[in-house]
Image (tube, rainbow, N blue to C red; front, top):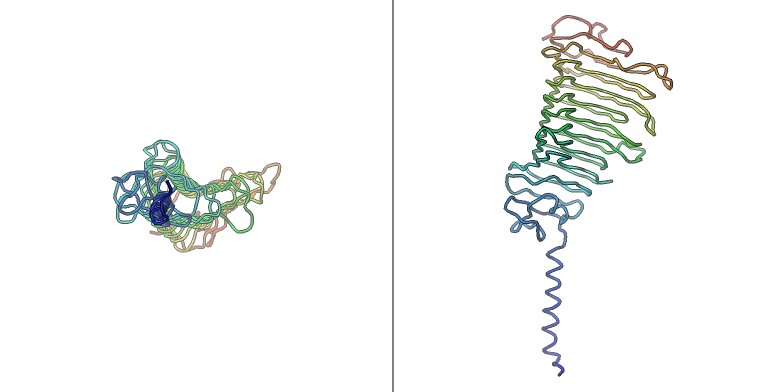
Length: 344
């Protein structure tokens, strides 16, 4: 028996509406929400938030943001798109006893992390691992207990402008067993990093700069590790390689080895600039203020270049010796690094 048209139309609209509602419930949106009382279902709305970063990311459009509603743990996540994770005003945490807390592998992506606490429990690999991105901004973070607090290792064949560009602001990076921050390219990529207003404390090495990386440090404490800053260029990459750091308006120090160590082998160059009222403190038992013991000739580079340059505006206390005879040191005035005078 055929139904009249007046009966068929409401049925048709009801069926279409049901499918439309089901589809929209799973559609990605530009802003999603997570909560410790949430569930990894649906679209992660403010009234029905999701539980983990990983699921919320799957429901977030590229370029959108994930908003954290309350304090608690939200699990490790791999970010493959442009996104902002916002945790201001609460205490959101990622605990990773193994592997990485947050992995950023977002080619051409723009990523921002704000207000997160990353906990490695002494066995995690990297708090934040960045292998591909156009830009990453991290601010108001706490990162500790990993091998590396932040590991920036570009692996792509990017040429031209440095990429990724990473900014770390107002962040505490503490107690990591290898380094607080590592920056370098493992392929043909380039890396630039700006560290501003941070505390990098009690890491084996505060900041490790490797091939094809340039790091600018401003108004930051790099203290209480075995080595404060290590610029270590080993060469052998696909592009012309270099490793360099500029440190300005900061407190530097180490407990046992070098405040600043510059090492170079192969075809690379390595350099550190210390200036503009940088306060350099060799701390407790440091034996070397600057060192470059690995700066030695090789078959491919008979005149390696390791340079530590100061602008004469640095204040030095508890000064250790100047080591690494193979390195080239440039300072102004000429006696600044070798003087036994106490400036503070």
